[in-house]
Length: 470
Ligand code: FAD
Image (cartoon, rainbow, N blue to C red; front, top):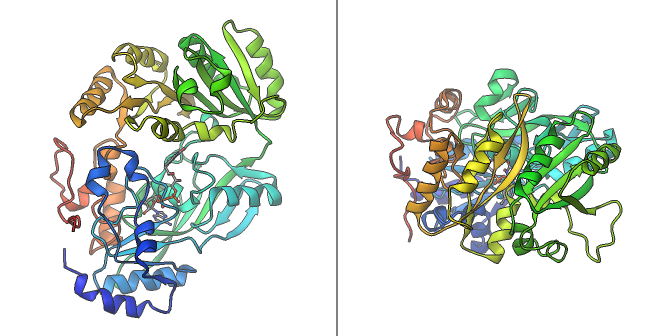
């Protein structure tokens, strides 16, 4: 890797007619994402900082930034809103952070599809779609309020809506991406079909998404529902059954093992006991009757809240902000020793596997948090188990115990694509990176296969060109 530091002033001068940020505090803020969420990543990435931030206003300016930085060998790490929690947006070698906040326009929207710029916030995109087409995105990150659609596609995987629609990687959940390469003469490419896999969930390592076309689904005034149960199996089965009820449309089915609700959900705590497990649901209004009929048949479950008719002095707020990665965020605000794992409990053994893992650890060390998710047409669980962190060695052991039992782990304590995924080279992403980013300047350090094709995954990868702490 070439040292670029002596080129910084010339590059900044060449880009000075753009929205260039050189204030120290603003650069520091734009250089950080939610990596600190992980006690493993926090000490390793805390010192990282870009040298400058540039905010292009359109695709032509993106091309200009990429071409200039290519000429001066300056690494470019793209930023949507910086809510990624595996250090996806951390500038490992410093250089340029390209912040896409100005590229926030919705370009067209009809029932069924929407075309937008990547810096559009998920909540703004949904609001626009709802007004103009009566539709909304099929699935969103629980960071809907703050995250961008480009960052969701490049750094996320699924979330609120995945109970019905599966994950972003499932066929049909992304329609088209427009992508700019980082070459001497950057190219603008349009990807559909098989080619989408090259850049989706690639952390901006092999091309910059400048336009997205996404499928949408009818928008509803979803009813947020909370149900409590003394028996964890009852809560888990409720989520599984409801996600399988063909006539009841859901956008969320989350299960929180006790004492999560009492200990970590401040506004819910007055309505639950220490030993109550909690189920959070988003139900389409026309599905409420079917839901209540189903609930009436169950023993040991009680609805404590519905957003369309409740007497709580202070409502819980957006219910999905209790689910997905928000659960851990709420927990670690109360207990900083909490971290989490991302686990896939696949159908048909998902419930049995969860019970097995519940029994595998000392009480309180691993607290179950499940999200019902559809995969290949079958409902299983994404587990975002909360873990009381003691040491990295113990965390590794907990991961091994899950894997040995047959649960798939997506390690949220790694900053590389491979280690956060299935620990193998994604040839589509790698081959496209070689073509689209020949100097390896796009979000360096995040794709092991590009840096070190012979890496064996025996230990945690440490990017050798990471900027050292000053
Ligand atoms: P950023 O963090 O800015 O970027 C993410 C990655 O994409 C980075 O590698 C960045 O370089 C790259 N990137 C950004 N824009 C582009 C572009 N235009 N072209 C190419 N590359 C680009 N994730 C989920 O999937 N589901 C969830 O439910 C979820 N819940 C979360 C809850 C909390 C509390 C937190 C902290 C995180 C959660 N996340 C979740 C992770 C993250 O918030 C989402 O993936 C989010 O959508 C990322 O969007 P962003 O705009 O913040 O992206």
